[in-house]
Image (cartoon, rainbow, N blue to C red; front, side, top):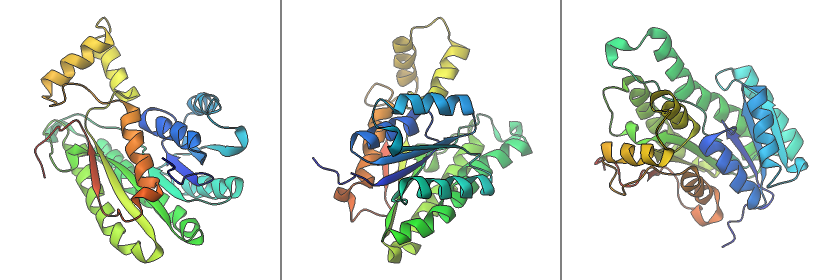
Length: 263
């Protein structure tokens, strides 16, 4: 199936690892151009070298960028449009979770989550919007989590800010519709990303990965009986970016193996 992504420019905020990197890889395989950013130059270089397996250097743009810094985001977006000829798709995939109960979370941790879940997205959309309009429309895909609808007490800060992002995404789908910009969310359950790998190595370094993730799926009562893989999320992202999803906006697609009970 032709997804209609050839020569489209996809900007992935947080595209140096995990779901973001896998999405960048798959966009390139579909003939799109890709821009990725990250704060760590070493990780950014590693990601770029990996992506060169799937697309030529002239179809990849990379820049160091702190997604919570407006000037950085503006510069990265302008650089992308200049290098690749515009912007058609924005994927907001940057961020990480904070574990802790309400009285354990510091003010600094709350601020960090608010910056990552709100302002990083706000800055990126503001910066990309003129370029999306210039192209006659485009797609914004915000990566979220099932926590947005079904919070857990031990992740209070992440859950609260995730819920706000879900609300923001729905509002923007209506506000940006006249510009022919479609806004959707992908809500993740447990996905085998670098973040979970770090937790595995920290908490159970001597346990085989398959056993660790199998036990995790049982503990979390995932109905499909396993943890998800980054490519399973990236496939949903590409669908939402494709011409096959031309009438899908304001939606949330859960990619969580039937985890959760929220409607």
